[in-house]
Image (cartoon, rainbow, N blue to C red; front, top):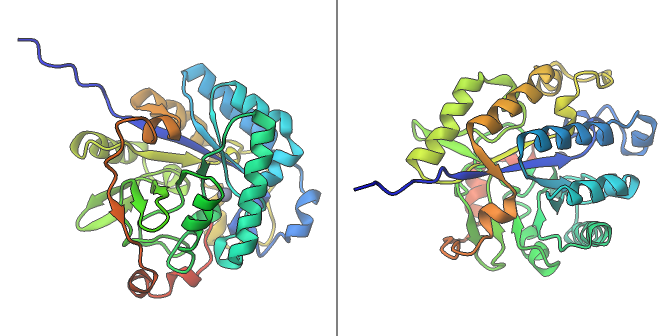
Length: 312
Ligand SMILES: [Zn+2]
């Protein structure tokens, strides 16, 4: 008897479309009002990413910042025309911990309309700047649902000095109350801890073989789809250097920038990837667990991490 053919698990490939001077790691060195004074690299870098995806036959989800979409409408149209999903990264890259619910609402509504007007396609996905949905900002899920979003990918369930919600589920779940689907960035469970395996700085810092083993474990042993993310500035080793950045943030931002693009090429050869909506919203996914995220309990477990300064 021929054994049934087992299709490899498909993971979600995501790109947070923002420029190098907008990251939280630089917020003490670059004032928001000074953003227009820095050379813009996001358009060229995103086109480089598009070219890589086209060469490798990968379709992905691009979480675009409203600030970027307003300045580069053609870029947004081109991403969409290439078959990728356009999703929202909010408007001005403010962490949710610095916004009131009504200011947050204005940003997600404005960005959704802007992206939908540009592409003529419904925008249903959202990612919080610096993964800033945490114990003190759990009101965000209801706001997103009311604004017409269907999913968020804004939680990393790890211990980290800058962000993270280690008590949250590791895999996609429906948030009790709002019914919004939250799709956490991938982690690996080892030695009773969650370890990062979803991209960003870790993808540049850790050996690729380790990363590959982690994602393979999630796909094969847990039979779950992973969520990978990176930024266009991570494929740009020539980006202008920002003065006055702390050593820690310099390492986080600049280390191994030359390695990102070749590693992503390797990653998409080793694993199967597609857009978030196709991986997680396709029919047959009606069995996500409903989970209540409780701010008090989680806040206590985190012990004040929510007040630290996130990056990414
Ligand atoms: Zn971001």
